[in-house]
Image 1: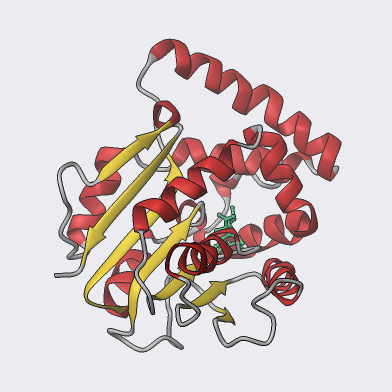
Image 2: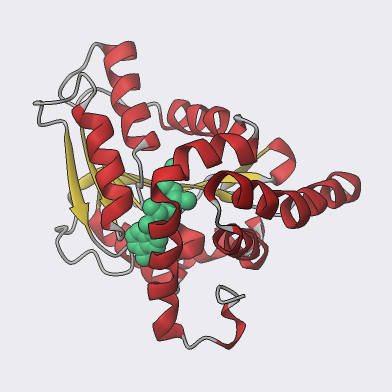
Amino acid sequence: THFGFKNVPESMKENLVGQVFENVATKYDVMNDAMSLGVHRLWKDHFIRTMAPGPGTKLLDVAGGTGDIAMGFLNYCKEIHGDASAQVTLLDINPKMLEVGKKRFAKSSYNHTSQATFEIGNAENLSSIPSNSFDVYTIAFGIRNCTHIDRVLREAYRTLKPGGRFMCLEFGKVQNPLISSIYNFYSFQIIPVIGQIIAADRDSYQYLVESIRRFPSQEQFAEMIKDAGFTIVGDGWEDLTFGIVALHSGFKL
Ligand code: SAM
């Protein structure tokens, strides 16, 4: 397919990734529910509860897309602390995904507050974001779409304040052989068909499945996080749902 990136020069990959999310932007939320059978909501809830942000936390949500993490974060601060001083900057490379996110915030109780701001930008080069400026950096289901993971991690390190935390939610590798074969069948046979039916776009979802397969293992990714300068606690990650997804975290100390 034209999204099979094997013979594509790296310089073109970013454009193709852009194209994928452009194609799926409006169907993105409904597709997430369909593909994960709603479980992505539980992963994201767990992610926010693990972050456990305190009042006034400043979050940079990179590859923030339609705003699940940004919204979950502000809701947590409001519900747990009654806090309206927390702030999130939602950054994404794709204007269409950002547009869907913006509209969602405009319809929410955060409309006309200065709690959420939106920026177009590339995770690999956060030139508009000053160094040492955020308490938490999140990237959920975004880093595997980036060409240079090491650059993304370096930029995360740069933009976090000392003491700040990097948190990533991303697909991982399933160790259990039985679960793994069921999961592979589901990913390669079923998901592209769901993509075809709901979004009329089999290729984009074929690409998403491929990108999951190519992403490093939990161990390899934890090493990359360390190489970028972060301090990790224990292994540095937690497997969710048999390792279908992993939550990685590191501190800038
Ligand atoms: N974080 C959101 C969530 O969990 O629902 C969105 C995840 S979505 C699967 C991936 C997002 O990454 C898309 O919105 C896409 O535009 C964005 N993206 C891809 N490459 C990027 C890059 N180099 N820099 C910033 N965002 C990027």
